[in-house]
Length: 334
Image 1 (cartoon, rainbow, N blue to C red):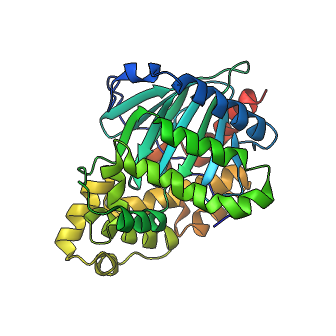
Image 2 (image 1 turned 120 degrees about the vertical axis):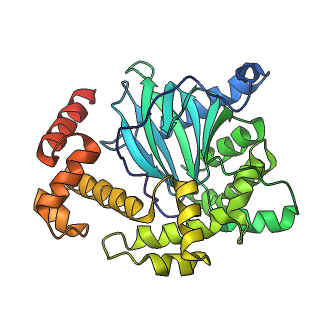
Protein backbone atom coordinates (compact mmCIF):
# COMPACT_ATOMS: atom_id res chain seq x y z
CA UNK A 1 0.00 0.00 0.00
CA UNK A 2 2.62 2.51 1.00
CA UNK A 3 4.85 2.82 -2.05
CA UNK A 4 5.54 5.73 -4.31
CA UNK A 5 2.81 6.18 -6.89
CA UNK A 6 2.99 7.73 -10.36
CA UNK A 7 1.18 10.98 -11.13
CA UNK A 8 -1.13 11.13 -14.11
CA UNK A 9 0.26 11.50 -17.65
CA UNK A 10 -0.11 14.67 -19.75
CA UNK A 11 -2.16 14.78 -22.99
CA UNK A 12 -3.74 16.84 -25.79
CA UNK A 13 -5.38 20.15 -26.37
CA UNK A 14 -8.54 20.25 -28.49
CA UNK A 15 -11.36 20.51 -25.98
CA UNK A 16 -13.60 23.58 -25.92
CA UNK A 17 -13.72 25.86 -22.95
CA UNK A 18 -17.18 26.88 -21.78
CA UNK A 19 -18.47 29.01 -18.94
CA UNK A 20 -17.57 28.47 -15.30
CA UNK A 21 -19.45 25.46 -13.91
CA UNK A 22 -19.94 24.15 -10.37
CA UNK A 23 -21.80 21.27 -8.80
CA UNK A 24 -22.51 23.24 -5.62
CA UNK A 25 -22.97 26.88 -4.57
CA UNK A 26 -19.72 28.82 -4.51
CA UNK A 27 -20.83 30.72 -1.42
CA UNK A 28 -20.38 27.59 0.64
CA UNK A 29 -16.64 28.27 0.68
CA UNK A 30 -17.42 30.88 3.32
CA UNK A 31 -18.54 28.31 5.89
CA UNK A 32 -16.80 29.11 9.22
CA UNK A 33 -13.64 27.09 9.74
CA UNK A 34 -13.30 26.11 6.10
CA UNK A 35 -10.67 28.77 5.34
CA UNK A 36 -8.68 27.84 8.42
CA UNK A 37 -8.60 24.17 7.35
CA UNK A 38 -7.41 25.10 3.88
CA UNK A 39 -4.67 27.29 5.36
CA UNK A 40 -3.57 24.49 7.67
CA UNK A 41 -3.46 22.04 4.75
CA UNK A 42 -1.48 24.56 2.72
CA UNK A 43 1.13 25.06 5.44
CA UNK A 44 1.79 21.34 5.85
CA UNK A 45 1.69 20.58 2.11
CA UNK A 46 3.99 23.49 1.29
CA UNK A 47 6.54 22.45 3.90
CA UNK A 48 6.57 18.90 2.55
CA UNK A 49 6.42 19.67 -1.19
CA UNK A 50 8.92 22.53 -1.38
CA UNK A 51 11.74 20.22 -0.31
CA UNK A 52 10.75 17.39 -2.67
CA UNK A 53 9.08 18.53 -5.89
CA UNK A 54 10.68 17.39 -9.15
CA UNK A 55 11.13 19.22 -12.46
CA UNK A 56 7.48 18.62 -13.32
CA UNK A 57 6.30 20.25 -10.08
CA UNK A 58 5.26 16.95 -8.50
CA UNK A 59 6.15 15.94 -4.94
CA UNK A 60 5.62 12.20 -4.44
CA UNK A 61 4.70 10.79 -1.05
CA UNK A 62 5.19 7.36 0.59
CA UNK A 63 1.45 6.73 0.13
CA UNK A 64 0.52 4.99 -3.09
CA UNK A 65 -1.40 7.31 -5.39
CA UNK A 66 -0.97 10.44 -3.26
CA UNK A 67 1.12 13.40 -4.40
CA UNK A 68 1.29 17.19 -4.21
CA UNK A 69 1.35 19.45 -7.27
CA UNK A 70 3.15 22.80 -7.27
CA UNK A 71 3.33 25.46 -10.01
CA UNK A 72 4.98 28.87 -9.73
CA UNK A 73 3.38 30.35 -12.87
CA UNK A 74 0.27 29.76 -14.99
CA UNK A 75 0.90 26.59 -16.98
CA UNK A 76 0.46 25.67 -20.62
CA UNK A 77 -2.38 23.28 -21.37
CA UNK A 78 -1.74 19.89 -19.80
CA UNK A 79 -3.29 16.77 -21.23
CA UNK A 80 -4.16 13.56 -19.46
CA UNK A 81 -6.14 10.39 -19.41
CA UNK A 82 -6.69 10.72 -15.70
CA UNK A 83 -7.31 7.88 -13.27
CA UNK A 84 -10.14 8.28 -10.74
CA UNK A 85 -8.96 10.81 -8.16
CA UNK A 86 -9.78 13.70 -5.88
CA UNK A 87 -7.66 16.87 -5.96
CA UNK A 88 -7.91 19.38 -3.11
CA UNK A 89 -6.77 22.83 -4.24
CA UNK A 90 -4.93 24.60 -1.43
CA UNK A 91 -3.72 27.75 -3.21
CA UNK A 92 -4.06 29.26 -6.67
CA UNK A 93 -6.53 28.33 -9.38
CA UNK A 94 -7.04 25.80 -12.15
CA UNK A 95 -9.32 25.05 -15.09
CA UNK A 96 -10.16 21.51 -16.24
CA UNK A 97 -12.16 20.61 -19.35
CA UNK A 98 -13.72 17.32 -20.42
CA UNK A 99 -15.47 17.40 -23.75
CA UNK A 100 -17.59 20.56 -23.85
CA UNK A 101 -17.71 20.99 -20.06
CA UNK A 102 -15.24 23.26 -18.29
CA UNK A 103 -14.66 23.77 -14.55
CA UNK A 104 -12.76 26.64 -12.97
CA UNK A 105 -11.91 26.30 -9.29
CA UNK A 106 -9.50 27.43 -6.61
CA UNK A 107 -8.41 27.22 -2.98
CA UNK A 108 -10.93 25.44 -0.76
CA UNK A 109 -12.48 23.54 -3.65
CA UNK A 110 -11.94 20.01 -4.96
CA UNK A 111 -11.92 18.28 -8.32
CA UNK A 112 -13.40 14.78 -8.38
CA UNK A 113 -12.82 12.42 -11.32
CA UNK A 114 -14.53 9.04 -11.05
CA UNK A 115 -13.52 7.39 -14.35
CA UNK A 116 -10.53 7.21 -16.70
CA UNK A 117 -11.37 10.10 -19.02
CA UNK A 118 -9.34 12.46 -21.25
CA UNK A 119 -9.01 15.91 -19.71
CA UNK A 120 -7.32 19.17 -20.60
CA UNK A 121 -6.19 21.24 -17.63
CA UNK A 122 -4.36 24.49 -16.99
CA UNK A 123 -3.13 26.20 -13.83
CA UNK A 124 -4.60 29.70 -14.16
CA UNK A 125 -3.47 31.38 -10.92
CA UNK A 126 0.10 30.86 -9.66
CA UNK A 127 3.22 32.91 -9.02
CA UNK A 128 6.60 32.58 -7.34
CA UNK A 129 5.20 34.46 -4.34
CA UNK A 130 1.99 32.43 -4.20
CA UNK A 131 2.44 29.08 -6.00
CA UNK A 132 -0.40 26.81 -6.97
CA UNK A 133 -0.65 23.83 -4.62
CA UNK A 134 -3.03 20.88 -4.73
CA UNK A 135 -3.15 17.60 -2.87
CA UNK A 136 -4.07 14.68 -5.14
CA UNK A 137 -5.27 11.25 -4.03
CA UNK A 138 -6.06 8.53 -6.55
CA UNK A 139 -9.22 6.69 -5.52
CA UNK A 140 -8.64 3.11 -4.39
CA UNK A 141 -11.37 0.84 -5.80
CA UNK A 142 -10.54 -1.93 -3.30
CA UNK A 143 -11.02 0.42 -0.32
CA UNK A 144 -14.23 1.78 -1.85
CA UNK A 145 -15.58 -1.75 -2.42
CA UNK A 146 -14.88 -2.65 1.20
CA UNK A 147 -16.53 0.51 2.51
CA UNK A 148 -19.58 0.19 0.25
CA UNK A 149 -20.13 -3.30 1.66
CA UNK A 150 -20.04 -1.96 5.21
CA UNK A 151 -22.05 1.22 4.59
CA UNK A 152 -25.01 -0.54 3.00
CA UNK A 153 -27.18 0.52 0.09
CA UNK A 154 -27.27 4.13 -1.03
CA UNK A 155 -28.28 5.91 -4.26
CA UNK A 156 -25.78 5.85 -7.14
CA UNK A 157 -25.49 9.09 -9.11
CA UNK A 158 -25.44 9.19 -12.93
CA UNK A 159 -22.12 8.66 -14.71
CA UNK A 160 -20.83 12.26 -14.74
CA UNK A 161 -17.10 11.58 -14.41
CA UNK A 162 -15.86 15.10 -13.58
CA UNK A 163 -17.25 17.24 -10.77
CA UNK A 164 -16.12 20.31 -8.80
CA UNK A 165 -17.36 21.52 -5.43
CA UNK A 166 -16.29 22.99 -2.10
CA UNK A 167 -13.96 20.68 -0.18
CA UNK A 168 -16.02 19.19 2.62
CA UNK A 169 -14.77 19.73 6.15
CA UNK A 170 -14.47 16.05 7.07
CA UNK A 171 -12.45 15.35 3.92
CA UNK A 172 -10.11 18.26 4.64
CA UNK A 173 -9.62 17.15 8.26
CA UNK A 174 -8.78 13.57 7.23
CA UNK A 175 -6.38 14.84 4.55
CA UNK A 176 -4.66 17.10 7.09
CA UNK A 177 -4.11 14.25 9.54
CA UNK A 178 -2.68 12.16 6.72
CA UNK A 179 -0.33 14.92 5.57
CA UNK A 180 1.01 15.38 9.09
CA UNK A 181 2.18 11.75 9.09
CA UNK A 182 4.32 12.03 5.94
CA UNK A 183 7.44 13.00 7.90
CA UNK A 184 6.75 10.41 10.61
CA UNK A 185 7.37 7.04 8.90
CA UNK A 186 6.80 4.91 12.00
CA UNK A 187 3.43 6.52 12.67
CA UNK A 188 2.55 6.37 8.98
CA UNK A 189 3.22 2.63 8.89
CA UNK A 190 0.74 2.09 11.74
CA UNK A 191 -1.91 4.74 11.07
CA UNK A 192 -1.61 5.51 7.37
CA UNK A 193 -3.84 2.77 6.03
CA UNK A 194 -6.73 3.62 8.34
CA UNK A 195 -6.44 7.34 7.51
CA UNK A 196 -6.54 6.57 3.78
CA UNK A 197 -9.63 4.48 4.49
CA UNK A 198 -11.15 7.31 6.54
CA UNK A 199 -10.56 9.79 3.71
CA UNK A 200 -12.37 7.48 1.30
CA UNK A 201 -15.19 7.05 3.85
CA UNK A 202 -15.82 10.79 4.07
CA UNK A 203 -15.73 11.09 0.28
CA UNK A 204 -18.35 8.34 0.08
CA UNK A 205 -20.42 10.05 2.79
CA UNK A 206 -20.27 13.43 1.07
CA UNK A 207 -22.40 15.09 -1.57
CA UNK A 208 -20.75 13.17 -4.43
CA UNK A 209 -20.61 9.84 -2.63
CA UNK A 210 -23.10 8.36 -5.07
CA UNK A 211 -20.73 9.07 -7.97
CA UNK A 212 -17.77 7.47 -6.16
CA UNK A 213 -19.87 4.49 -5.05
CA UNK A 214 -19.98 3.08 -8.60
CA UNK A 215 -16.26 2.27 -8.24
CA UNK A 216 -17.14 -0.12 -5.42
CA UNK A 217 -20.03 -1.89 -7.12
CA UNK A 218 -18.52 -4.79 -9.05
CA UNK A 219 -21.45 -5.14 -11.45
CA UNK A 220 -21.81 -1.45 -12.36
CA UNK A 221 -21.09 -0.40 -15.93
CA UNK A 222 -18.34 1.93 -14.71
CA UNK A 223 -16.57 -0.83 -12.80
CA UNK A 224 -16.83 -3.25 -15.72
CA UNK A 225 -15.37 -0.71 -18.13
CA UNK A 226 -12.68 0.08 -15.54
CA UNK A 227 -11.52 -3.53 -15.75
CA UNK A 228 -11.12 -3.19 -19.52
CA UNK A 229 -9.31 0.13 -19.10
CA UNK A 230 -6.82 -1.46 -16.72
CA UNK A 231 -6.11 -4.14 -19.33
CA UNK A 232 -5.48 -1.48 -21.98
CA UNK A 233 -3.20 0.48 -19.65
CA UNK A 234 -1.22 -2.64 -18.77
CA UNK A 235 -0.73 -3.68 -22.40
CA UNK A 236 -0.93 -0.41 -24.33
CA UNK A 237 2.11 -1.34 -26.48
CA UNK A 238 0.56 -4.63 -27.59
CA UNK A 239 -2.06 -5.42 -30.23
CA UNK A 240 -5.56 -4.79 -28.92
CA UNK A 241 -8.30 -7.42 -29.19
CA UNK A 242 -11.68 -5.82 -28.57
CA UNK A 243 -13.25 -9.25 -28.04
CA UNK A 244 -10.94 -9.88 -25.08
CA UNK A 245 -11.78 -6.50 -23.55
CA UNK A 246 -15.50 -7.19 -23.91
CA UNK A 247 -15.05 -10.55 -22.19
CA UNK A 248 -13.18 -8.90 -19.31
CA UNK A 249 -16.03 -6.41 -18.98
CA UNK A 250 -18.63 -9.18 -19.15
CA UNK A 251 -20.44 -7.52 -22.07
CA UNK A 252 -21.33 -8.26 -25.66
CA UNK A 253 -19.26 -6.41 -28.27
CA UNK A 254 -21.98 -3.89 -29.12
CA UNK A 255 -22.84 -3.17 -25.48
CA UNK A 256 -19.15 -2.88 -24.60
CA UNK A 257 -18.50 -0.35 -27.38
CA UNK A 258 -21.49 1.73 -26.31
CA UNK A 259 -20.61 1.86 -22.61
CA UNK A 260 -16.87 2.33 -23.20
CA UNK A 261 -17.48 5.40 -25.32
CA UNK A 262 -20.22 6.77 -23.06
CA UNK A 263 -17.96 6.56 -20.01
CA UNK A 264 -14.50 7.42 -21.39
CA UNK A 265 -15.64 9.55 -24.40
CA UNK A 266 -13.25 7.47 -26.56
CA UNK A 267 -13.32 4.18 -28.45
CA UNK A 268 -10.95 1.48 -27.12
CA UNK A 269 -8.55 2.03 -30.05
CA UNK A 270 -8.56 5.80 -29.50
CA UNK A 271 -7.90 5.24 -25.81
CA UNK A 272 -4.92 2.98 -26.60
CA UNK A 273 -3.56 5.43 -29.17
CA UNK A 274 -3.65 8.32 -26.73
CA UNK A 275 -1.93 6.22 -24.06
CA UNK A 276 0.81 5.33 -26.55
CA UNK A 277 1.36 8.93 -27.58
CA UNK A 278 1.33 10.10 -23.97
CA UNK A 279 3.96 7.56 -22.96
CA UNK A 280 6.12 8.31 -26.00
CA UNK A 281 5.98 12.01 -25.15
CA UNK A 282 6.93 11.27 -21.56
CA UNK A 283 9.92 9.18 -22.66
CA UNK A 284 11.17 11.90 -25.00
CA UNK A 285 10.73 14.64 -22.40
CA UNK A 286 11.83 12.87 -19.22
CA UNK A 287 14.30 10.30 -20.56
CA UNK A 288 15.62 12.03 -23.68
CA UNK A 289 14.55 9.12 -25.89
CA UNK A 290 14.99 9.57 -29.64
CA UNK A 291 11.80 9.81 -31.69
CA UNK A 292 12.23 6.38 -33.28
CA UNK A 293 13.11 4.72 -29.99
CA UNK A 294 10.06 6.25 -28.27
CA UNK A 295 7.78 5.28 -31.16
CA UNK A 296 8.88 1.65 -31.27
CA UNK A 297 8.92 1.44 -27.48
CA UNK A 298 5.18 2.19 -27.24
CA UNK A 299 4.14 -0.18 -30.01
CA UNK A 300 4.41 1.74 -33.29
CA UNK A 301 5.98 -0.15 -36.19
CA UNK A 302 6.16 2.94 -38.41
CA UNK A 303 7.90 6.12 -37.24
CA UNK A 304 6.14 7.98 -40.05
CA UNK A 305 2.74 6.94 -38.73
CA UNK A 306 3.80 7.85 -35.19
CA UNK A 307 4.95 11.32 -36.30
CA UNK A 308 1.70 11.92 -38.19
CA UNK A 309 -0.51 10.87 -35.26
CA UNK A 310 1.63 12.77 -32.75
CA UNK A 311 1.29 15.97 -34.79
CA UNK A 312 -2.48 15.43 -35.09
CA UNK A 313 -2.78 15.10 -31.32
CA UNK A 314 -0.37 17.76 -30.08
CA UNK A 315 -0.50 20.18 -33.02
CA UNK A 316 3.22 19.85 -33.80
CA UNK A 317 5.63 17.13 -34.93
CA UNK A 318 7.53 15.45 -32.09
CA UNK A 319 10.90 17.22 -32.44
CA UNK A 320 9.40 20.72 -32.45
CA UNK A 321 6.91 19.94 -29.68
CA UNK A 322 9.52 18.46 -27.36
CA UNK A 323 11.86 21.38 -28.00
CA UNK A 324 9.14 23.91 -27.12
CA UNK A 325 8.07 21.93 -24.05
CA UNK A 326 11.64 21.94 -22.73
CA UNK A 327 11.94 25.68 -23.35
CA UNK A 328 8.69 26.31 -21.46
CA UNK A 329 9.84 24.13 -18.57
CA UNK A 330 13.15 25.99 -18.31
CA UNK A 331 11.47 29.41 -18.41
CA UNK A 332 9.06 28.37 -15.63
CA UNK A 333 11.89 27.25 -13.33
CA UNK A 334 12.43 29.89 -10.59
